[in-house]
Amino acid sequence: MVEKQAVLDIISAALKETLDQQGLPPPASITEDTVLVGKDATLDSLGVVSLIVEVEQALEQQHQVAVTLASDKAMSAKNSPFRTVGVLAEHVLETIKEEEEAARG
Image (tube, rainbow, N blue to C red; front, side, top):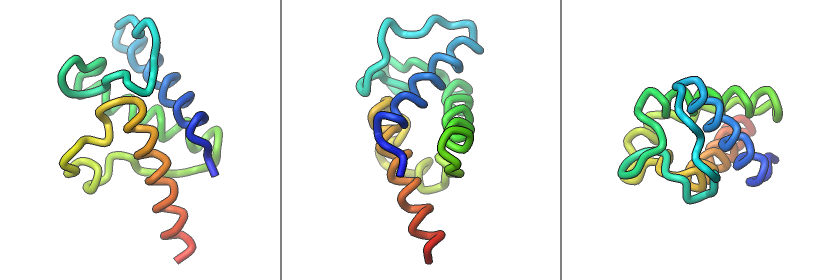
């Protein structure tokens, strides 16, 4: 099982990488409250897509976990699972759990 801190570390690294790719400076500090989308967003829509890809790739490379974070369910959720770093971390953990349960049948 992937621990929450490991997921937070992956998201933080992915956020820094995504901002660097866009030529933007990273926030002074990245916490669970760092806003990713919406009001005071750190990323634009393209940045969110890049972040999701970075996180999915890191999970697969570092933890051998293959997940799809931008599912129909996630995209249609009333409250975006991409709002903040902390909310995204919870979404990642929930998605891993759901996919492991589905694999067990």
